[in-house]
Length: 140
View 1 (cartoon, one colour):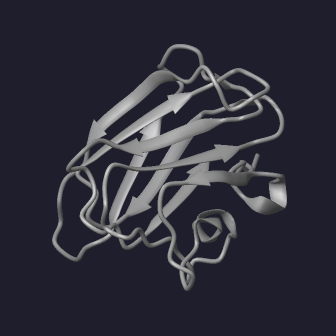
View 2 (spheres, rainbow, N blue to C red):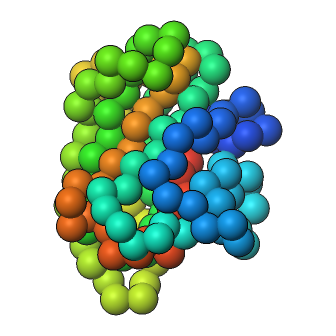
């Protein structure tokens, strides 16, 4: 059975907050399904974006594709509003100069894989991003 990427705007996902934006590479590019588009940050940190799913979802796997990300912190909310986020996953990513970081996180063994309608907050703590060139998020 083919898994559906829940983190696509065609599946109802929406970026409801991003701490920086470039008009040529806006945050919505992360969820447009086009492998040629991406979000670029302005280089200030910490960087954060919130993806809203508009329905409760059960996450099995996350795939984060990025450049120049040192640390990734993911919080989740089971609320109907984008509030009450709780820490969920934190990862230090391997820095590969100019190379794509392809981080796959299997969520099945983690506690409480349910995510509410206002989904997940993805944050890079201070020093976590150096002008992140790209972030594409896949939620299965």
